[in-house]
Image (spheres, rainbow, N blue to C red):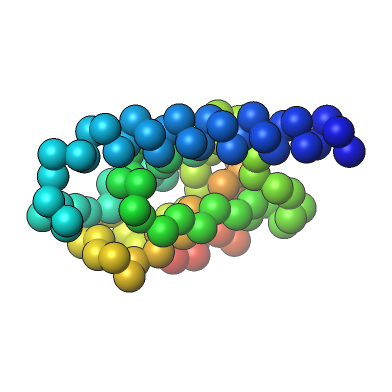
Length: 116
């Protein structure tokens, strides 16, 4: 139990560091930066998702392997699916949904043909 709590705390600290870095990069921008679109994350590591999206973007990350695992450490996961598709405009109401599997695993066939 203590190990799980420690891993969770480290993951939260890592995400906070990414959010702080993101805040510094966008501090000079206005309320709503123009031209925000969803990048193509398919096949990339989950860490790239956290570093490329603005800190204000709503994000839903889940394991699509069918094992219902918790996604705690972003560097150990790779992206299989994303919604909305790459190039879609982002606004304050958009939630980006990312489906991931552990690095080294292949994306299940059922999610490869699903909405991306």
